[in-house]
View 1 (cartoon, rainbow, N blue to C red):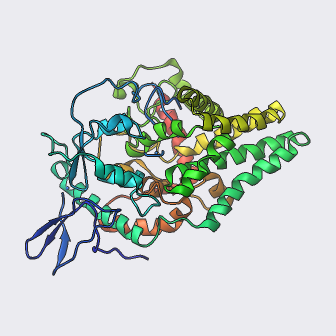
View 2 (tube, rainbow, N blue to C red; view 1 turned 135 degrees about the horizontal axis):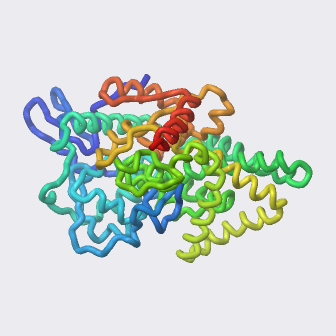
View 3 (tube, one colour; view 1 turned 90 degrees about the vertical axis):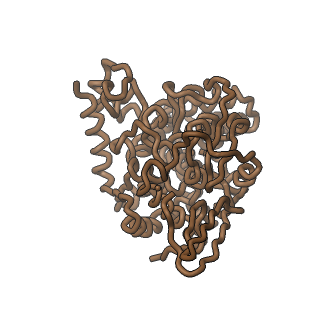
Length: 463
């Protein structure tokens, strides 16, 4: 069991026993040091998929968008000043919003709010392999706090204090090397993804059913693998992003745009596409969400899981459309390699494997969110992750392989740039932190989580 240290705490206010206050305004490459004199304590500061149609499922790099939420192209031009707080420093992001890799929506939603935890969760700031985002942040103009700023210490002091504890916890993990990648583990995960592709291709004409299942399995694993690399930071992860278009025909920019919103505004209605899926799926009654009802709602528990068969087909379509619109010749060339390979397979194997891969991903990717709390207000990042996310207890080794790290969904949402093969070791440490800080850690058997998802669809299908 690792112990927590108060030697470093990013973005927090420390009170010394001599009543002197030291405000850590900013981490230089996430290395802020506060010399303790006497005693030190922390004070509360408190399935659709179109990148052109709705927010999404990761930030700087970040799996689904929908039509009910605006994209950055849809957001009207405004001269209104946009300011957000990170590490107790207010930044004027008015000019930067449109250039933000995760989309302008993200920046605008944080106007007048604290974005410290969201920034360090998803961006490159030093300990997680790169410091590109931190350097960009440091170049933004500073500004005064806007009038009427919605800050956690003003809304809920208890939550604000717990979030400060989480920042301390994160720094301890940084110091202990949790964000560093292990090349042997990387090779293992790449191999268990590529081998099914090779075997399936070899059997495509002699054993088409087996080939379909094998390639479909490989496509699912390629989804998890690329998901990990797109979240990761540094040159290695940047290089390995090519596996997305090569293995699955997915466009990185499309994925970034739609996934970042899900990670930051998890289970927040009309922001998180993974739970805002009307009129296909209703996770809340229409009268509660204010969305138009659909006659098909009464059957959603019947058609729900079979519809996951088209997940990858939709993602491929949106990826191709995005790459063509952006004239991304590099990714289009890699996607062309993937489609040429598919064209060499029997058409039944090619289409069938895409359906199998999509089903295996679709059925699991949001399973740990959809039966949890749906929120209609914007909360604090850390608190929202604990309220909206449940871990899955998966004991069968093959089932754990299928989950691809999504069984440790809470760990992933709190630390998305951490390599996924470290999450299971982190679980007991996170559980101990939750007992100390007051956050609620929730975990259920994988079979119950799938059952709860189906029951939620059935319950919301009722009149």
